[in-house]
Length: 213
Image 1 (cartoon, rainbow, N blue to C red):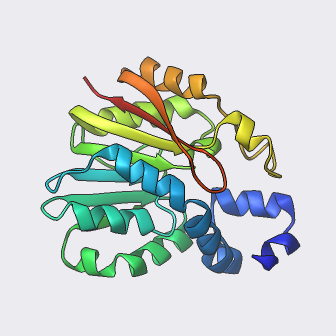
Image 2: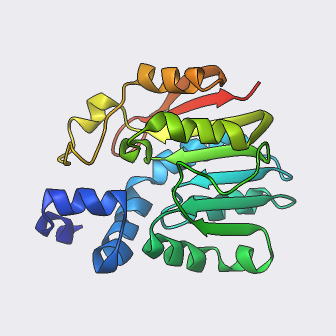
Image 3: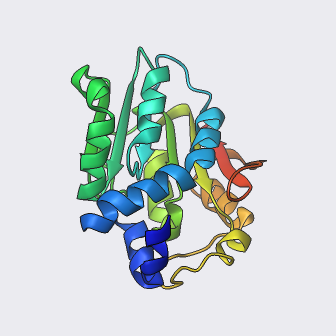
């Protein structure tokens, strides 16, 4: 996408964190949909969704994964939360049919304090968002809180080695090793935290998977 080369690295980094305006609506939507395609697919596979599952995606971006999950959870629901108003509008368009049928619910909000009761979701996922969490323990703790016993969390990510090869602002993006993420999940109380990997574009895709005992 030629226009990306014209955007300064810091502006692109800020937009990746919280898309806004023209760049967020048009440029970041295309970047997210193309750059996250393989990772989103891997996240969806790793969730092992069932038709009756109630699912939450943290940082849903343009809403493509929400839509794909809703196509599977035909007897359940999919919630999503994101703090970007631009992404909320984009995702609402993509998911208009499921929203109208009462099976998708999109929320605007800060993901370190989720607006949900305890123990309500069967599955929870997030893709390429943890780099922006100033206090990742708060986010992981909230994930644990809203998941039901036996529920599964899947976090799709690029590890610190991959992130070092991308021209992004280090004061905006935090990088994590695979072990860092396992430690975060385990310390929050999740059980059997593990890293799965799969060949993908533009990198090998990683998913951290764990359950709430």
